[in-house]
Length: 243
Ligand code: IPE
Ligand code: IPE
Ligand code: MG
Image (cartoon, rainbow, N blue to C red; front, side):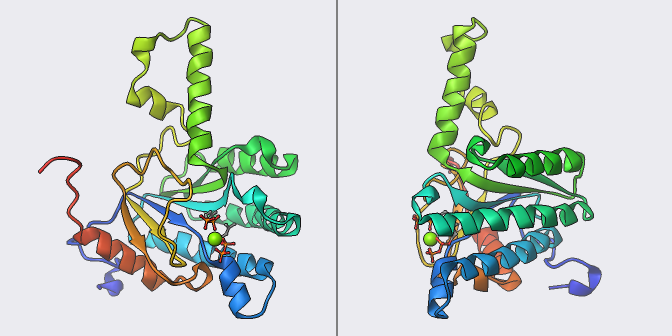
């Protein structure tokens, strides 16, 4: 790896355009240390910042982090409150990414989040919209099924208003109504913590994604682990149904 030239990988490595990360294992990380779960979330937020920056250094164009699912509201109120407080704090810090020319986007149903959080999200998106070194996507109150239901609603509304007919419904129309409208499909999904499932993450966009699973808990996930995932991806043979 020719770090001195400013590049981590040489040109033979195929870096995925869009990486999705399911940030899992915070609770178990804390439990192993005899700490309350919220300490795991705090540590996981630190990992998020380090990995987001390293993604840019590796030449990844889009990275989506799954931070809170539509199902995570089932957790005890004090844990949900602690996670929401962390978001608010880290939204202020997300502004640091702007100094690095990183565009920030949020996906998910925002209407259930605190108004102050929604305002901050909107402001960060607006202020960073022209940045082009990388797009950092945060999935908050995100669910793939919720996203598809939301897309269908918007299409049906247009149909009821006479703006669309049945023949207009194509894959690309549906794609254009997803929260990820302008973001390309995910190429590589990384899930730490030993679980091997999507848990409602990017279910439409992952139709041809490659997966990388590791037993490492998210707070322990390192820059080297990200490099390993990218190198593994680079060796995969993707066929997209062809030969
Ligand atoms: C992921 O870590 C963070 C969120 C889902 C918000 P978990 O909190 O799910 O950690 P484990 O899976 O219980 O270890
Ligand atoms: C997936 O993790 C959601 C996030 C990481 C935000 P979960 O811990 O909620 O997933 P399950 O419940 O193990 O499937
Ligand atoms: Mg979990």
